[in-house]
Amino acid sequence: MKKLENKVAVVTGASKGIGAGIAKSLASEGAAVVVNYASDKTGADKVVAEITANGGKAIAVQGSVAVKADVDRLFAETQEAFGGVDVLVNNAGVYQFTPIEAVTEDEFHRQFNTNVLGLLLASQAAVNSFGDKGGSIINVSSTVTRITPPQSAIYTGTKGAVDSITQVLSKELGPKKIRVNAINPGMVETEGTHTAGFIGSDFQIEIEKTTPLGRIGQPDDIAPVAVFLASDDSRWLTGEIIIASGGVR
Image (cartoon, rainbow, N blue to C red; front, side):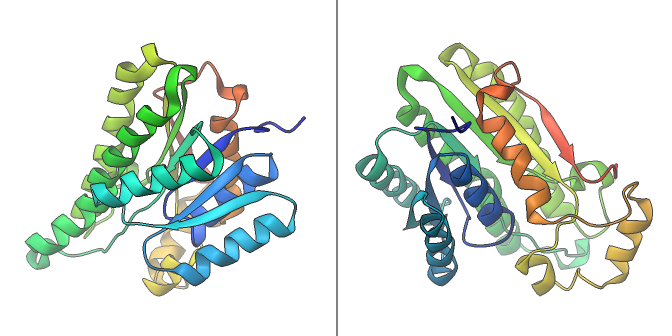
């Protein structure tokens, strides 16, 4: 029997990159997966098509996690398609590295609204969907909270909040049989890191120099960690922050 047979998972920001990798891996272990996306319908549909072509179950649902009405609709459509939720992966996130002189209110709110408020809204909805059986919430954070790179004050601030919220909610939701853990990836090669100019940059070179395993990550380096946290294999883990970075600290 597969590890996630008869489970239902919602993965936010799953049209590409780490989220897409997690969605496909959860499906490969038997979960019915809801592929949430904000704007990339083509990407989300591609992920769903790949899952279903391999015999899995998946649907794509549009919605911004920063908007409560969208989050409510996401979970309502999940309920309609698959029933209650067992796993939530809070992967949706945005980032931009900006020197302190260039910080703006708009950029602050853009990142905090998605990375922090969105995580809270989705977690709130998931708690209502889990029911008495409990569930697993997996937050995708970042090793920026450990390496604190220059010009990342806003982004690192959002992920510091994610780490803290993970530990708060693990204590708050433990009595409801809900486990809350975080994965903190290092630099991962995705569409986003290509677009941001990180791939092939001096920053990538510096990261690789300080990474014991000598390379940056790929989405399929992160996805198995999410499968572990979603499954009963991690039934005694909550409030943990798992650094999936090839050893970089």
